[in-house]
View (cartoon, rainbow, N blue to C red):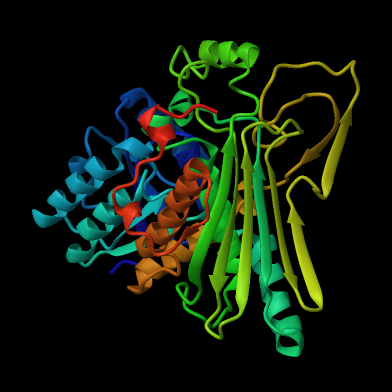
Amino acid sequence: MSTRLGIGFIGSGFVTGFHLQSLVAVRDADAVAITSPTRAHAEAAAAAAKQLGVGTPAVHGSVSELVSDPAVDAVWICCPNDTRVAVVEELVDAVSRDAELVGVACEKPLGRNVAEAKRLVELIEPTGLLHGYLENQLFSPALMRGKEVVWRRAVPATGRPYLARAAEEHSGPHMPWFWSGERQGGGVLNDMLCHSYEAGRFLLTGPDEDRNALTVIDVNAQIASLKWSRKEYAELLREQTGGVADYAHTPSEDFARSSVTLHAPGGERLLVEATTSWAFVGPGLRLRMELLGPEYSMQVDTLSSELQVFLSRNVTGSEGEDLVEKQNAEQGLMPIVPDEPASYGYVEENRHMVRAFLDGRSPSETWHDGLAVTEVLMASYMSAEQGRTVALPEPALETFVPAVARGTWQP
C-alpha cells in the first residue's frame, strides 16, 4: 500500500469544496479524480484542486470510470442525497469487476430514511471495504479539545456528563435541491440535525467507550415552517430556486428540535437536546454546543470568533461569503472564522479518515454510525408527525418515510 491516499470525489458541489480546501493541511492524501453529472462542475472542482495544490484530478464521466481509475485508492461520496443508493450500487458493481479500492467515505446523512441507510450498509459490508461516515462537526478542534479536557479532568472526579446541547442555524441552503423534501429526504431536520445529534452523542460518550456504548431509549421532536412558508418568503424562495422550491404548496420544515433520551453503560440517564434552523438571521452560520455534568460545563460558539472586523456604511461591495459561511451582511461588526475548513472539522476529519484507510483500520465513524443517526432522525420525524414520544426500537421505522419527503406535510 502506498504511503499516500489517492481520493476520488463523487460530486463537485459545496461540500466537495470544503474537502478540497481541507486537504491543504492533510499531508498524505491527494485529490486524484472527480466525477459529477455536470462535467463543467467537475472541471471547475478539478481546477480548484489544482489551484490549491492538493492534486490534479482527472475528470471522469461516470462512477464506474472513477472507481476503476488506478490512481483512486478511496472514494469520498459527496453527491445529492437522492443519488446515494444508485451511486453505491454502481461503485460496488465496479469493485466486483476487479476495481481496487481501500475504503469509501460518505457524507451525511447516510440515507434519506432508514431503508436507504440500511441498503447502503448491506451493499458495502460484503465488499470488505473500509467505510467512514463523514460527520465533520465531531472533528472540530474546539469540540475535540473540550471533550478531552472534561473527560480527563472533571469526569473522574465528579462523574460522567448527563446533558449535551447542540444547535446549527443559518439562513438556508445554497443549492435548490436541498430545499426539496423529496430529493433531500426532508427539511432542516434531515439536513442538519444529523450534525447536532451526533455531536451531542459524541460528547456524552467516553473516550474509551465504543461509539455504540449509549443506548437510545426514546425521542421527542417538533418541526415547523416558521419563515419560508410565509407568503413573501415563499415567493422569494421560489424565485431564487428557479421554481424548485414551492413552499406555498409543498413546504419543508425550516425549524426542528429533538430531545433524545439515552442510557449509559452504567444505566445513567442522559439527554441530547438538538436544535436546527434555516430561519436564523445573523452574521452567518452559527454552531453552538454545550456539555453539562455534575460539577462542570463546556461550550462552543463559532460566531464568538477570535477575529472581528467592523465595516462602516461607507464600505460597500458585492454580496458573498468571504467572511463566514452563510454570510448575511457585508457591513457592521462582523465575526470572521479565520480557517473555516479547520474550525468546522473538515481538516481533522479527513486526516483521520485518510490515516485509517492507509493503516487498514476502521475509522471511528462508520456507516453503522450513519445508520444509527438516520434511525434517530426518522424517529424525530415520526414523533413530530404523530405528536408523541417514540420509544426505540420502533419496527415501523423500517419503512417510514416522513410526510415532508412525500410532499404531503403542511405546517
